[in-house]
Image (cartoon, rainbow, N blue to C red; front, side):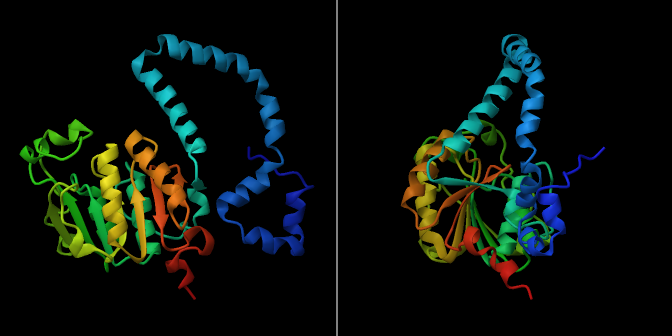
Length: 297
């Protein structure tokens, strides 16, 4: 049975014409929290009877749950600590970003690439540069859902090249076989995708300076590589450009670069809660919304 909001408080306000406009201006996420907020404290107190069983379950998992269970539990706790203690990085719920009417096609197993493709559409990007192609799933999703967008994607040319890099490489599992770009090869989207090869720490990005509406950083996750890729991304940004870092909170190198950079930027870097994405944009997304939405009649 669905929980009912009491007749007093916001439920009564929702019937009051003087309050309806204010409620309608809220995003779905903020509206849900507003309507439910008055019952949070009582529900927390009602759940006090679960403290004993939860504590016992926590101890049991830590002692007998096996390495996998301990890793998941402690890993998630560590991620949440990083999320809320990151200085100068704003946490924004996905439901509050105004993407609910944007339809995206793609593989649902990694929903971050769907959010990225939606952001590309809402920002009306015409040029995208991706650092880290791998099999090209993200490359294809972005190109497929943005038919007017040109995508450039950079990765190493071969397995042998992985042994001659400037900085430390993370994720050795990505260097077992070599099928970079396999997802988009032979597809209609491939005509708008330019596949580039090289070490991102030594690659000549100068032909792309000032040209990219979106740069997606998803190469090696070591601190030196993320810092180098970020410096290149900042130079490539157009006047309305946006940088998106993948795997924020999941690798210390990315977390460190983002938190070091955030106090020096002209706009806030924000993390989209529920994803692995951190975002910096020369467009005031949090203040003024998406250009693609603002352009609607």
